[in-house]
Length: 162
Ligand SMILES: [Fe+2]
Image (spheres, rainbow, N blue to C red):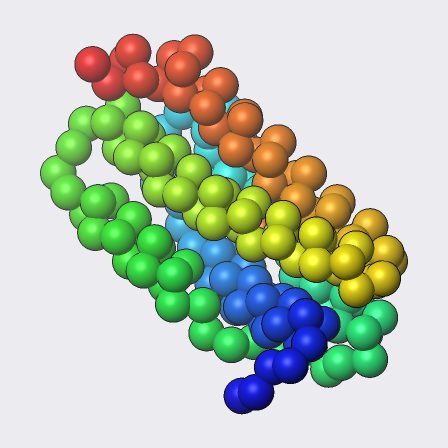
């Protein structure tokens, strides 16, 4: 695919993220099920709902740009989730499993934060303030989720897992 303008590159990144969010939407309910700590479990359930909203926002953003929503398989998310699944299958105590779930989830959040960040910056550059505004809401949610995961880990789970 030839990309001569930043807007095309932006749409490409959106397709990557659309795939990433869809992959994550499938896995988050399983992560919630595997979590033992009730706060962590509730956190995953909340983020599963948020992820559905974020998929909707991406569809809306494609529409604002006159594009049909489409996904390009996000190999990075595929890899992070595959690695997470592998770790989850290890024989560990529930506390260590929770710590591993948080570690995997934070890798996911960081990937999403950096991709939403790039798209929002590019959207502003190409004059798509509406897209920046819309996907900026998702960026905020990802940042809050990441902070919340750090808090849950540092306030209890990590110590219980020692
Ligand atoms: Fe997300």
